[in-house]
Structure formats: structure tokens, C-alpha cells
Amino acid sequence: MGDPTVTTLEGQEEAVAHSVADEAVGRRGLLRVRAPRRPRLWFEIMLIAVSYWTYSLIRNAVPEQRAEALRNADWIWQFERQLGLAFEESVNHAVNSVTWLIVGMNYYYATLHFVVTLGVLVWLYRSHPGRYAATRLVLFTTTGFALVGYYLYPLAPPRLMNGQDFVDTVLVHQTWGSMASGDLKNMSNQYAAMPSMHIGWSLWAGLTIFAVATVPWARVLGLVYPVATLVVIVATANHFWLDAVGGVVCLAVGYGIALLWYGRQPYALPRQVAGPTREERAPDVPEAEEAPAPSASSNSADAREVPAAPQRIRVPKQG
Image (tube, rainbow, N blue to C red; front, side, top):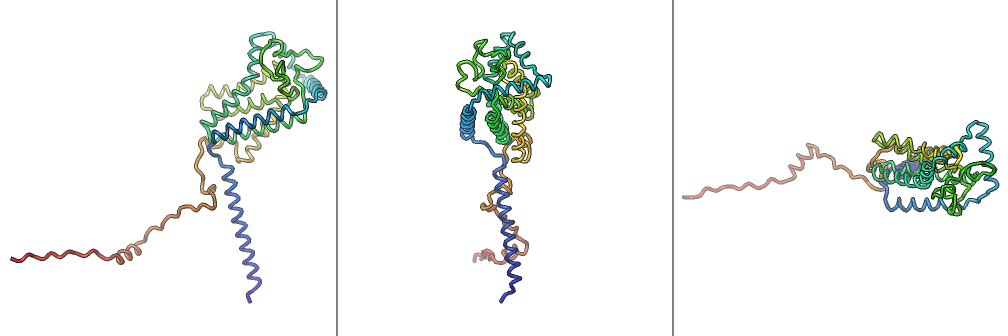
């Protein structure tokens, strides 16, 4: 009979070997999932469409708790006054006195929020495919956390507050702008002001342009864009400046999630998508084995094993 101690040790060694092999397979699988890859156009179009539809559905399905939203707006306004930073009403009245400026801001608020965001996504897809998925993850995570904010903290925008003198610039100037004004107010939740995704998305776009673009004027525009958006959301009385802070917090969470998943920030990833590394290949796909170089001894042996070609003997002609 064999020694049971030896049998136990062999079993333990075999278990450890299996554990190490399973861990290696799992690590390679995780590397394959996390590795940047070239995005597929049809999938990205479908993903963006479904995601925005889901975002709009959930955002507008949040109960419009009007009384609580107005109470929260009063609290934020009082808090800003205590800080000495309640400047939204002054900005709103000052910009509203310049008709062409406020009308332009109304259209800015209604259009660039979507146009610039989609434009940056398309640009990344075409010119920076290696960074596309990670940067898109930041945007989607930011938006997801914003939905949580809409549900937990209903907030009325300044233009809907009671007892204040804010101007609803869309109604006054009869322009198409805020989805929560005029004939469009029934298509959107009017009390989903915290956090501001106008700031979250514009800062995402601006930082992406600044970090990735190589043309100086484009990088400058990347920095100007979120600042201009902050002025617009305050001047049109659609947000408090604290709503913008909420948008920045959501964006920071988005970057944190991307950092945890990819191990580095999206802009530090390679611009182009490289082929899979050896560790990222599927474990069940064997790699091509190189044939060993023939040695000198084997060459001589092979030469001995191959019979020499018979030589032709020339017979001289007679006569």
C-alpha cells in the first residue's frame, strides 16, 4: 500500500495547480473583456438610441412631487443667500434685457446639449477608437447617477419658484428652448433639475476635447464650452449653480468607474486599437509552435540517410 502522506501531498499539489490554472484563465478572460477594441457602428447606434430612450423614460417617470420640489428650491435659494452666492436672479434679469442674447441662449440650451455630445462621440469613434468605449462609459455612468438624483431629490428650477422674480425666458420671448416650458412642459419632468446634465455632459465633452484634441483652438473651445453652458443654464433660470455642482459630482463618479474598470483614465489609453496580446488570447486557442532549428548533427544524419544520386559513367566510343 502506498504512503497516505504522499498521496495527500500529491492531491494538494494537484489542487493548487488547478487553482493557479483557473486563476490564470480568469485573469486572461478579464483582460479580454477590459481591453479596448474597435467599436461596431451598428451596435453603438443601437446602444445610444436605447440608452437615451431609457434615460428619457426613467427621468420623466419619476414622480413629479411638486410641493417637495418647491420646498427644496426654497431651501437651496436660502442656502445660496447665506453663502452670499445667490446671483442667479441678477444674471437672469441682466441677460434677459438683451433680446438677441437671451434668444440665442434659449436655442443654445435646447440644441447644443445634444449636438455637441453626439458630435464628440462620433469624433471619438472615427479618430480615437481605442479611447471610445472608456469615454462612453464615463458618459453613461454619469447619466445613470443623475437619474438617481432626480428620484431622490426632486427640485424645481428657479423660473418655477413661488414668490421670486425669475423670468422664464422661453415663455417671455416665445422661443423654442426648455423642454419644461410652454407647450413642451408635459413631455418632460419639470422637477428634475438636480443634478444638471447640461453641465455633466458639457464638462464631459469639454474635457474630452481638451485632453484629446491636438489643435490649440479646439482645446480652448473645449474649456470654454462648459463655462458658457453654466452661464446659459443660470441666465435662462433653468438651474441653480448648485445644480451644476451636482453634475460635476456625477461626472467625477463616472471617471472613477472608468478608472476602476480600465486601470487608467480614458485619455491615457492608446488612440488606436491594438491587436490582442498574448495574455488576452483565449486560453483554448493554442499558439503556433515554432519548429526547432535543426542541429548540425541532425543535418549530417539526414544527409547520411539520403542516398546520393547515382553518377553517370561515360563510356568512350570505339573506333
